[in-house]
Image (cartoon, rainbow, N blue to C red; front, side, top):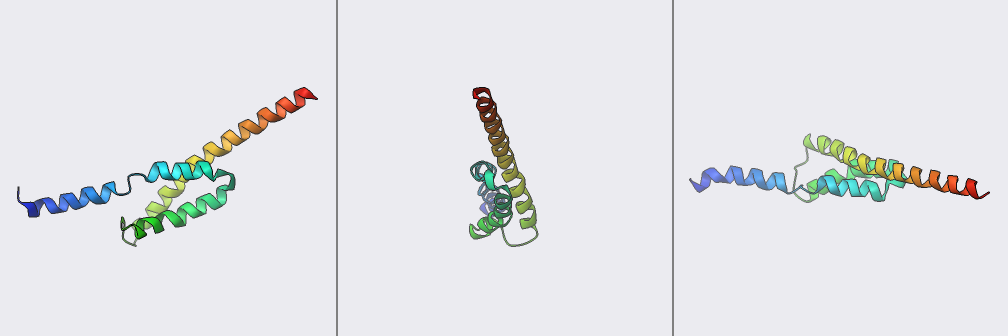
Length: 101
């Protein structure tokens, strides 16, 4: 194994493992800020590609459009869970209040 032939493979592994925490990070972001879902999705669409470029994970280019789409999708999962939990808590509270009156 010639070290020169390993360099492209090492570069591929490093580039594909740097952004490993994307999915959980964005889902948690959506969970925490799901109350303001429009703002959360916009921040994910613009902020995550900026983080990837600033962290030297991706170069500016067409691939950032896909990264922004995945960021919105992952954040949307967190927002959806937040909204469902919020709705369930409110409906439970309303039922309890109506039962007391």
